[in-house]
Image (cartoon, rainbow, N blue to C red; front, side, top):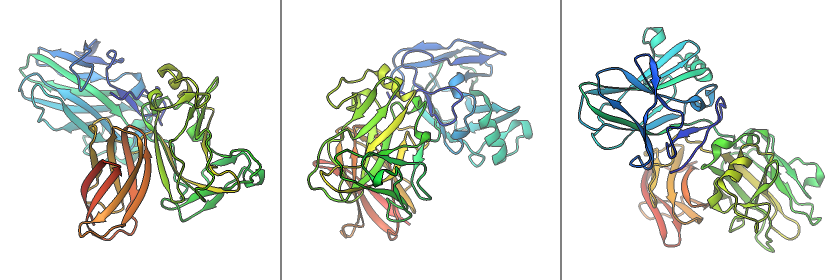
Length: 442
């Protein structure tokens, strides 16, 4: 089960409770007072979960802990999701209540929970998704009101009223998504710099408004004095990024040639006392190559050197909690070269939890699609995967792209650009490992 730890009051951090080691600060609220839930270490969806023994016909709710509160403005237009389970068939209803800035918002959710099985619930946090303003006569909240509540969130309650029922009612996998630092370079440099023997020592890359993957991108030219040069991330990628544990660092690279390649540290996450180093198995091509690196100790990261010790979970999270610098290698050739970068993301950007995709499975969204296609996969074997979008009539090469994907859950976004309307096969392939889905482009 993926662990996405959060930090109270940080608007840019996704927060997650999977109850793998306890109730995680959640309580049960009824009759005006709080109570401890019942904790079960196994039988959840999967792993641990919490329950309330609903023995009387009263209103009660699961009440969220502090890490779900504070300034959550980064969760606007993102998802709040969770899993619920009833133990028998009864009349019930499910609501979510958000309280902040003296305002109460609520939403009614479907009532089709199957007894004895987990059901997933998800809602988007905006004024267009069915929310109502209890403090404003049950009217649809304005965008300003919704953002005001999320900026000053003081209480989150998942309300579950079950009539004439005796048994445990349970919850698992509560996920509040938030914005992640992203650089697409569609407008400017976005604060990125280069370091090493590059660009004549100016530290400034070249900006290109077109030709990226898609849109704008950055490039830099090697000074060829013997050092290795790197892309240096701006401040929004630094500091406390504890909430990105179990998520991904994603970026696109390309280089001027693939001759005379050499090895060096490909990614450097600089912490206060030591660095985390990652070495990708292959260098980028002369066309855009996408990388997706899992941010956990089991993904291939090392301490201070590619031959260093494997970090413990505590060590990994310690660096993520105080990132001093993020460097991505830009030089791969012995001798003069140039390199390019685009689409750097630290964390999840979809707003939807990624733990639902089963191993060996790929889900495409939206379908039908217009401007982009989102691919959600669960990769069992990391490596380079070739993506293609092919017309069902057999016409090849409508879209071709190359991704480096580490094992685990992945969410990728592919621009459809000028792809004509029609029926296509979306394929992701690594040797004998193939994912295919039919896609309608409108």
